[in-house]
Image 1 (cartoon, rainbow, N blue to C red):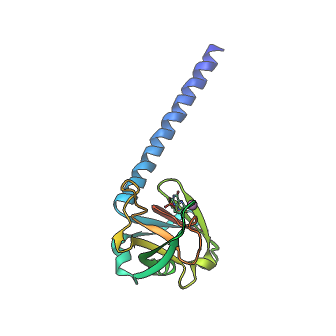
Image 2 (cartoon, rainbow, N blue to C red):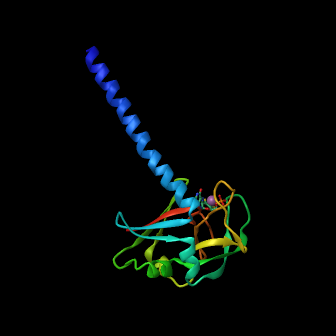
Image 3 (cartoon, rainbow, N blue to C red):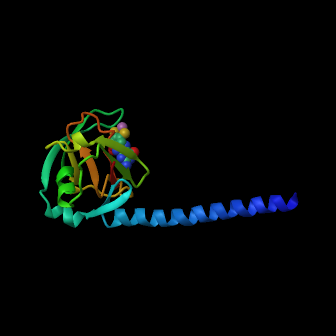
Length: 170
Ligand SMILES: Nc1nc2c(c(=O)[nH]1)N[C@H]1C(S)=C(S)[C@@H](COP(=O)(O)O)O[C@H]1N2
Ligand SMILES: [Mo]
């Protein structure tokens, strides 16, 4: 009986240790994605591209006006600077055929989803890096970047993804 208890305790300690060790890697990767300002593009669970701020700045960069609607506050109009997500996917040679959802994951654990149809619209979903002409700033700096996904046509902004880290096509 005593032996069984010891075995259980040892197994639990190992599980906790291994989980902590694995999360440590995750955490390092998260911090790196924010420091180096890049987003990983996944397609059905595997990485297909990695886009950093420098590459993004070489693409078709545009200014877009959008409403930031925070809960309990009046909508605020801001000008965001970035690239249409559709064009980012094209530039990165990511195949969108047969995919119907775009899942975005952020460094704070926030996840939001947008339909592929919306994503393929010409003036709606953007991967942005500036607000009103200034860098978005990181989470630590009280910002919403370095990279963020916005939906310009959405009157609410809860599906926007601040501190975006991963974009997963499914
Ligand atoms: N990563 C991340 N993105 C996010 C959120 C969040 O908590 N984390 N909140 C969402 C909500 S509810 C809103 S209204 C907008 C603006 O959030 P803010 O008021 O925190 O700036 O961002 C959206 N995107
Ligand atoms: Mo919100």
